[in-house]
Length: 122
Image (tube, rainbow, N blue to C red; front, side, top):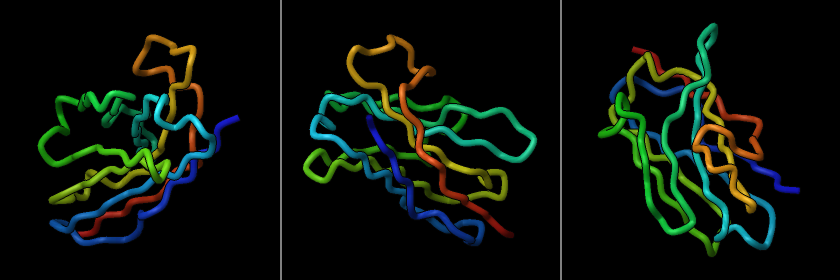
């Protein structure tokens, strides 16, 4: 029902910044709780950040400070701003949506995007 398409990834240098975008289908985007996850090769998928339908945000304790999540409901888009990129940030970044009826869990979204690759070199 909901399609999510990430963009904005690529090859960057350590210390650079990136702004990832996730475009969502549907006419009720403003009712979706949105989140970003990432997965490095051979690693578990980890939570990065989330933003609720009322703009409440939550971040991974280990990542907050360099990551900022935001949304533009008029454009059906959620963003992830990443500053001071480090090689350890190299991963596939996934956009996810929790739609009504809400799961009640930050870690169990209903829909996932295909991901966008972020590669950070030194």
